Structure formats: structure tokens, C-alpha cells
Amino acid sequence: MSKLIAISFALMVLLIPISSASAQQNAQVGMLSCRTSASLGLIVGSHQKMSCSFTPSSGSAPESYTGHINRLGVDLGIKGGGVMAWAVFAPTNGLSPRALAGKYVGASGDASLGVGAGANVLVGGSHRSVALQPVSVTGNIGINLALGVAGLTLR
Image 1 (tube, rainbow, N blue to C red):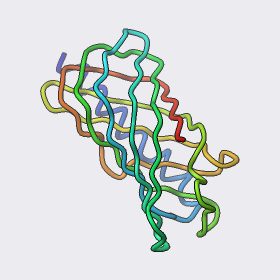
Image 2: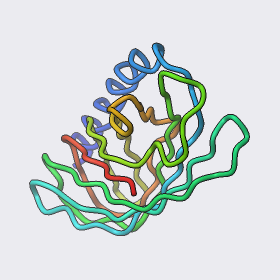
Image 3: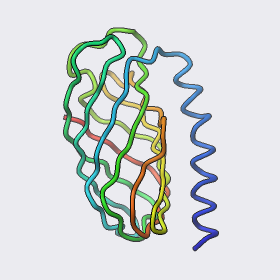
């Protein structure tokens, strides 16, 4: 199990430069923070409900979103709810209200043995122009290993 956790963290380290390259072409427009529900890894995938808050860099009022994240790939174990945080990048400094609503796809890695961590690098939203770059790893509690593709839907 420790080798699987080491592989998972190595994958997360590799994901961050990929997201940094796409984010360099865009401006950071705010932060997205989400609370996730508990999940059960179903060997080839999982589903978690989320409640999120987007805080724009412009000082505008925060926006609330609900949604879910699905993973497809190796997903083994069970974990309690957690918190995910992303820096939000877009091609313009001013996003219209509710611009983060939509579907996102990207790479996902997660490992837990008691306390765990993970990262999800996602692109989508308004005309697939929004990039979500992890600024901190996911915090969760459980026994889990997940590597694969993530799909996030925000409403």
C-alpha cells in the first residue's frame, strides 16, 4: 500500500507543472474552495457531491456553486468528506457572474491512509476557457487510492 501512495503523490507532483503551463497564458481571477461528501471507490470510478464558493480577485461578492466530481480510473477504498481549493485562471481579468458554471475535465490523483491528500487539474467552464489549478492538495480522511480522469460539474 505504501508503494501505491508513493506513486499517487508522484503523479500529483507531475500534474502541477502541466497546470502551471496552461495557467501562465491566463490571469488569476479568484479562488474556488469546495467541500466534498464522503465517497466509496468503486474500483473503476467514484462520485462525490460538492458545495463550493468562488471568491473573485476583483473584490466582488463571493458566488456559491453546487455540483459533483466523478473519477474514472483506479479508485479503491472509502473516504470521508474533504476540502479542495483551486486558483481560478481565465483569459480575462473580469469574469461575468456565474461564469464558473459548467463542466470541467482533467487529471486526478488521491491517496489516503488515515489522513490523505490529492490534486485535480481541471479545464472547462465558460467556453472551456477556465483552468482550475490546485493551490493546495485535497484534505480527506479514509483509506483510498485514486488515479485517473476527473469530471467536475458546477451549477
